[in-house]
Image 1 (tube, one colour):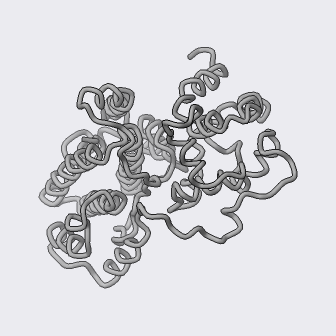
Image 2 (image 1 turned 135 degrees about the horizontal axis):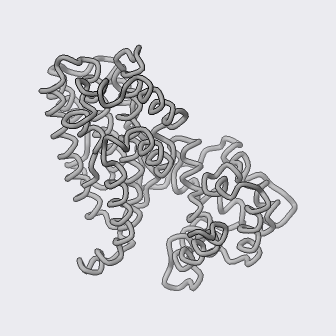
Length: 374
């Protein structure tokens, strides 16, 4: 399961409210709060993790948990082989985003409460990104559902603890309870389509969760916020494409296989703002990396590099609810290809020799040349 070390520490460890003043004196608390400035649950996983390590790493073994997760991702092919499970049996989903506005937040009118709100929401956002990566790495719905079941049990355990404990700190208790509830709902709505129709998360399940955790039924506003979210969960069926001009690739008379033309075509997304491109420091290095890839006109290689650079995830941080089909359609507009052709290049087809999955290793090698210390 994906663990929640920060929430566990708030309930059982050094981040307990009665210890926080000793564990993080005012100056240290201020610096920890500053380390999280500008980071949101929709920030990239690595960015969230680095910020949380800087903020609470001296009190909570978050880095150990993050390293274990990376090891699990790396071991996915070996695990699938041992289980004799075929990959590519997963439903394609767009990355899920953390839902955090069903319940009204308690007042956060002190630095300490603001800090607690930051760390619990960032841990929940990081959990959703990690789930998305697990689903993509193992590419097997049954594995995802088993992992989901274990993690939801962990969340329920923490919910039970939060309900019993921290009674002398009602605002912290409420922050933790609501973050856990939001995480549970986010996971269920994001992965609802993997369940059979009888097992899917419904309004009745939502009522039961609220009743069990808060000893009341949802308010009218909470019902409405929940129901407004249900239609936006990831779907397995093709969705109508948006007509908004900002989701269309700009046209240009130049070839998309030329770097400057490609950068212009992916507007309104700034290529230099992709976190992994930003690490290259300047446009000259970005061009040095990407121009030779584009010049090959090998779509498998090009899509692999965009996947390695996490271009789709970058778009999802800007446009909530952005789907994989929208992404493939966007690439199709740039390279003048049909959706099915883009999908085959990206996810691999036994009849296609240049599918993206063949080039991920090469993309990593080309990228790391800019960081000789690696």
